[in-house]
Image (cartoon, rainbow, N blue to C red):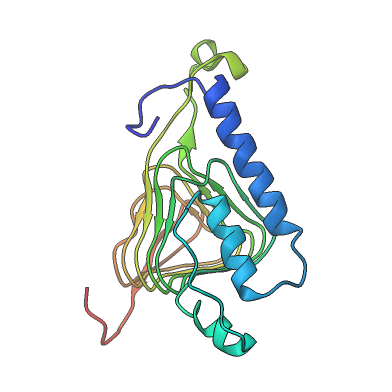
Length: 202
């Protein structure tokens, strides 16, 4: 699965892995008004990150400050496996994000998502005889989104895409191929609109 080869998704171990992640997403999405520490804990549960949290501080503001570099995720979110999702420092993901992480999905530091962003690293054979519903195989390709990107609302990113550092993807775009660093792309399929003038270097 991780190598992008054909695999059967409806085997007991993978069904269990998705069920674990579904339960973790449900806990996160239904958490309500809880401290930042709890949100970070619930997010780490989704991505199966067992890194211990820092010891709590008595002052709530000081305790929140301990998690200043942690990703900020707005509920609801839906993830397939969780353990194939890697987020950098200060990532912001707005509500209704969907991540199909059959393969590795990485999102670089300080990248921001609008609402309804979907990342699909999984795919299926085009031949319906091979695809064969839940009895047939599927596959995937990694998705990599660089640091300091802005992925606007209702964007869909397809398997195998790399979005370069500092890029912007316009709202409603379907990204089918790599996006060069420091460029704006938009449309379905997304095409380069212009280069971004910036003091930042790759």
